[in-house]
Amino acid sequence: MRTISACCLMLAALSLQACTSSRGSGGKSADAALSPGDGAEGSQGGRGGYAGTGGSAGSGGNTGTGGSAGTGGAVATGGRVEADASTGTGGIVGLGGGMSLDAKVGTGGSTVMDASTGTGGSAGMDAVAVAEAGPPPTFSVDFVAADQSRFYSRADNGGSVSFGAVNPSAADNAVAELVFKGNAALGPADKLTPDFATEIGTNQTFAYGTFRTRVQLAKCASSEELVNGIFTYFNDGKDHDGDGLVDNSEIDIEILCSDPSIISLTIWSEYTSDTAKQGVSRVIHTKTGAYQDTLNDTTSLGSGTSPAFKLAGFPDPSAFYEMGFEWHATSLRYFIVVGGNEITLWTYTDAKYIPSLPAAFLFNVWHSTDWWNAQGTADYPANDAVMRVDWFRYWKD
Image (cartoon, rainbow, N blue to C red):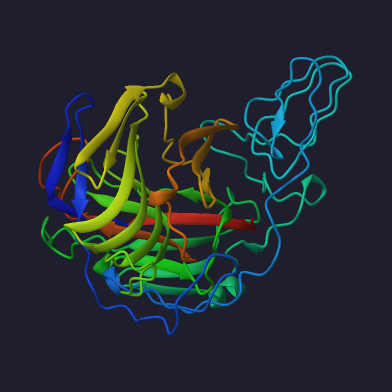
């Protein structure tokens, strides 16, 4: 989870700002080195004092049996249909490892489910973990009150965390609510960084596999700023691979409350300091479809525009969105579900920059002074802002 600092890279072609990170300290260290595979015991060290212990990630996998599509239908890939699977006469849409799309069928066809529930948002039901569709998740949580024991939580800004909050838009009418406490008397420089986040994180760690969640983003005024963070994180301050840098296992999805049309994706494999790190990022502007890739927040790796990234009306402030990533040893694919369609946001394949250590899965909301789409000093939110989490699923490779 990057903490945005004043030293930023201007993305001139996109009028976007990719920012360097400064990380605090204060977390507990793990007792032993971790290795890829099953979740391992360990505590979250490094910035913001992320804490928690982990057990075994269990067993399972994310490989499903791909479904078949009739005439005009999309082909299932790896047990996941990645397009609007509309079949023709007599067509049948199958499900593999998971499906989060609007599966429409024509005359004589049958459909497993309709994964679209309205403007912008993804399915209210669990559109992935359907028993008949493929293997069950290795780890699954619906954020009912009893699930609180599976997470650590903190609210260092005076906010609060609650599990089992009633919400009719949730699959089971229950969500976790992360309340960031607003205060009109505070200014831009007050309670900065994830040190003052409202946050929850799994007590268990996870390695390679597929991670999916469904969330409603925290909102604020355009003159204010909060970061919505959905990410994995592990940093015990040790150099496990002996390359001279502290290993940092982190896969970030970050969306600002002032302009949530901008999605920042970052993959960290090393982090000792702002000048000794290894990470790659993609920033996507969903109003225009423009994107910019960078190395270590300083070196451009390319830019462009993709029609697939132009998401009209995203995000609907009242909607929940399904999003996540597939993390493997040599590739990492980010995705989001909008209007019932799963959109691949980034597929990264340079193994050098992909983390290998198991990590916890976290959600947080925290104050930053900087916007990503313009220079300036963002104010502290005057009113409470709430991130809501419907469910989280993990399938181990």
